[in-house]
Amino acid sequence: MTKANTITPRIVHLADQLVADIEARKLKPGDRYLATADASKLLGVGNGLANRALQLLERRQIITRQQRRGAFVARPVDSDASPSLRR
Image 1 (cartoon, rainbow, N blue to C red):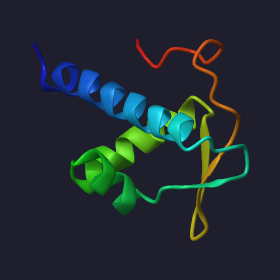
Image 2 (image 1 turned 90 degrees about the vertical axis):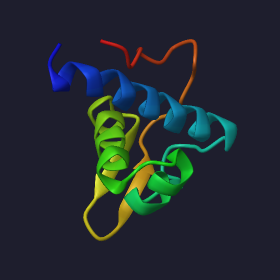
Image 3 (image 1 turned 135 degrees about the vertical axis):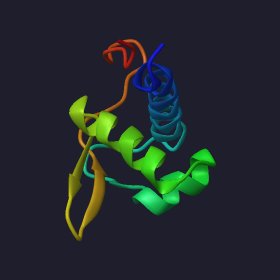
């Protein structure tokens, strides 16, 4: 098994935790979301892993990120309608 294959599920799990945080806080589109350092503290991981989890949410169009402005919720998170973050 390659190293990339062992890391991917962890990133997906971390991204799932961030989605759960968005749902728990009832954030709406346009609401500010966590910066990388804050996500790192929330998840209990380093900045690199937190950044990759945020990148996955951005690719899934759950958040948008703007340089020097931060991250924002892009669309409502609905656990029934949202696409799975799993591969």
